[in-house]
Length: 323
Image (cartoon, rainbow, N blue to C red; front, top):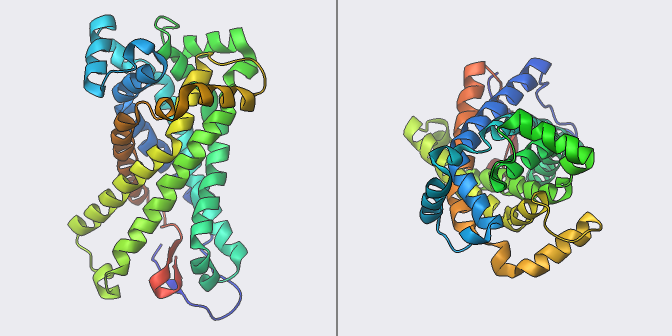
């Protein structure tokens, strides 16, 4: 599908009519890019989770923590939780990326005109990312709970199927979704940082170029813009979501008092304090920058390979919606 620019001529906005095949391509591209990147980051995530939940690792750096894991449990321990990570982020990534494409299109339709879409573009990004992430997290939460239990409790189970089965058998739906509220607090800010900051970084980069220059970008220039935007978006996603990420690890390990989830989160946050809530932030910023930039790069490549159409883009400098 070729891109075309729609100018304000009436109150209606003419948007592409994405077919079910288009949305399936968005889903598959998002699923693959998230599975590949999160799977590759499994060793870093293992060490990060140990730092968050195990007092013996609390003062370790990323490198010393990895050495300690290998010394105590062997090299294979760095791949603990790979199964639920790969499956969980396959379904979550597909739902998030396709959901963002869907919600952004619907949001532009709701505001009524290209000029209004430009004016409220940040709200469009924020709302689209939040709604898409909410529904994606319904799929992710049970698998994330299994992953954290495998990583934080040595010998809990041999893999995804046995770990998921044990968690479901011993705790039921309540235990599988015990982390749903904190995972929302983690993943929605993460998605906001990922999508909104990436969009705004692209806008900032394009604003300094003429229309002709934008249309004739070299592959190297496109790659540098995508990579830079993804890295900055990754830093933002990590910072915004890290306190809830720490609390999520604690909840899934069974820490905290009884009572409502909000009460447990409040008590755990107070006990941890600002320093505890941001424990392991440095390694996670590195990991998230790689994740987010890698995901956007792979998402574009996979979409193009599948013949999927471009999503809706909103650019302030032209007061247009590019389809």
